[in-house]
Amino acid sequence: MSYREGRFWQPDVTVATVVVRDGRLLCVEEHSNGNGAKGRSLVINQPAGHLEPDESLQDAALRETREETGWDVRLTAFIGAYQWKAPETGRHYLRFAFAAEPLRHDPQRTLDEGIVRALWLTPSELLDARDRHRSPLVWQVVADCLAGSRQPLSLLRQVT
Image (cartoon, rainbow, N blue to C red; front, side, top):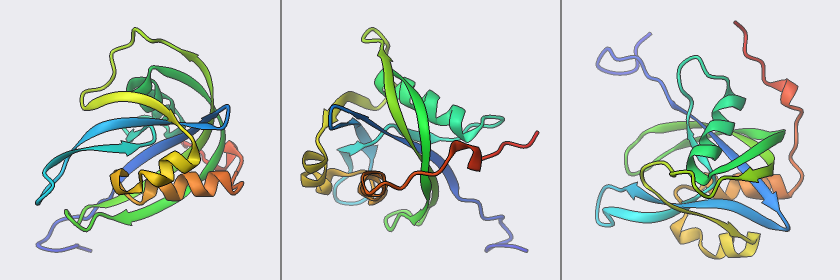
């Protein structure tokens, strides 16, 4: 019934998109509010963020991609669901990842706070920068996508 100290435990629910164009992956370079010796650092992630109340997973993925990169995308598949516990903070994350294709870019769009820039990296460039990944989820999601992990979007349902 309770997690500890009478509190209800709940993971952070996040979404992420893997957007591929001409063999490159749409990524974001962002500030991370790190704890410990590294403090605040510049990390690489795919467009990703938290699910908001009354929002579907798919709508959250589209919104986060637009807010963090200025790109409108079309979701093409569900890659998978990932569970991870951040060792520094002990926070638990449940990430739902989507494959997407780019549609149009708005270069005038102001990006979310903390986002330095959007950039297109080859898979090997992203892998070579793994010491800067926001979490191990970044590469795991991309590796699964590149390996062909694709499920129909209809697998996810929002019941109202």
